Image (cartoon, rainbow, N blue to C red; front, side, top):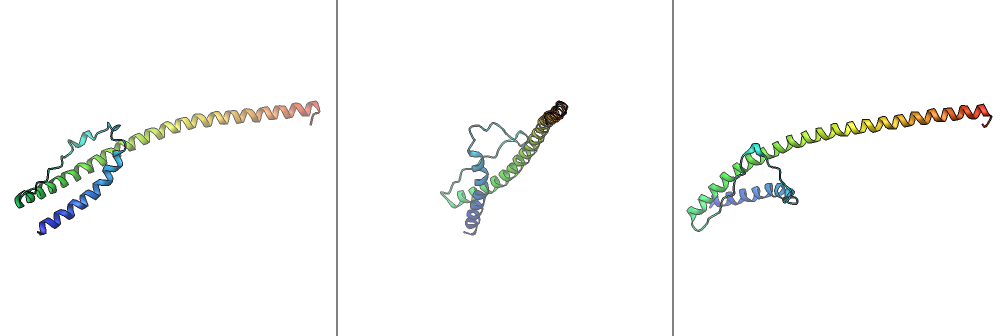
Length: 131
């Protein structure tokens, strides 16, 4: 009976931990083509059989083994995703910096042109006596 209570607690905890991960990605599941190719195949959840005590105990063992494998796989996926997201972010940041530098150069050039034009117009106005 103790094994049953422990298994139920583990299953509930496991469900809570992975529910957040699964729900976060389900909104765009149809669009998701990315896979963590370096992590191997995702472990498959076992079927739970509970017609007898022996089947139940075997199910607890299979769920426990799945939980361990799924946690390892999930950690690998998260790490690979983090590495790829970081690389994408760094690339985007470099591209943004390039665009920003170009934009800032244009703005500086235009500001300098306005200053020169304003100074020329002021000088011409003084020369012509139109203060």
